[in-house]
Amino acid sequence: MVAQPIDVHAEAAAQGPPEDAVPGITARLRAAGCVFAEDEAKLIIGSASTPDELAAMIDRRVAGLPLEHVLGWAEFCGLRIIVGPGVFVPRRRSEFLVSQAVAAVRSGSRSFRVPVVLDICCGSGALGLAVATQLGMAELHAADIDPGACEYARRNLAAIAGDVHEGDLFDSLPADLHGRVDLIVANAPYVPTAEVGVMPAEARLHEPLVALDGGSDGVNVHRRVAAIAPEWLARSGSLLIETSERQAALTEAAMARAGLTTTVVTDGDLDTTVVIGRR
Image (cartoon, rainbow, N blue to C red; front, side, top):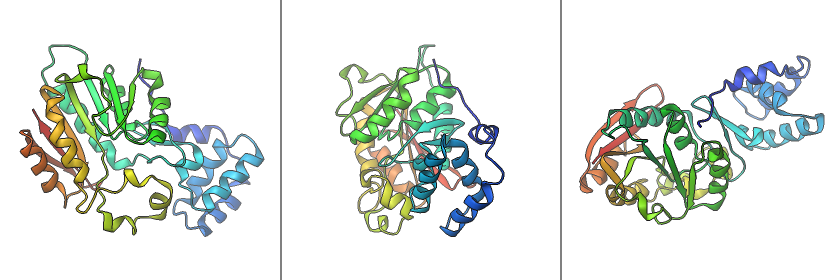
């Protein structure tokens, strides 16, 4: 069973936010610095079940809480991902990582068996859920060091019976996954430590530091993942890590040192880069 894609914008519109409420809420959100204030107003109105809840949601957004945390969900690859305070919000640019991951699985040799997918540093589990949904069938595992993230991942992956493991990278995974994982996807932190302080407040103040800080050059976690991943990958299995264009060479070098054959792909529209390593 896989999650079904939804159009969250159409769904919000279908709930019919009262037209007379939109302008006032839009003005308040715009004054608070929300760039897409009218769209946000409609989404908040469509998500609130009572006037008191609506007022509280607006107050939280005006105070700077990320819109997705206010709503309790984020749209990602056409899916509604449950999120909330203290968990990393999946970004649209990571949809490129999903598309590359699905293509990597479909191009691999698996003798027609169900693919085994691992979402490492999974956060809310958005990547793994999106990949499994697009593949139509997968044995999905997700892992994160943050207990709060794991709770959100369990909620998001419950519908597809995905297994969530709490621990540092590969430490909590069952031993029987050794050598049989077809795909590892990682949106591990890649912001250099010195740059975390200048990130947008929505991320810096409301998302866990462990999901943002990638060390002095931003690729510390990438190196750790790349060094260990080959022992978990099946033959022709792939490791895909989201990174930035300026850091891609460092991420690629880490995969090459681990013996993986590497490729770097970019998407200019989404301003994102993915490094692919194949066993």
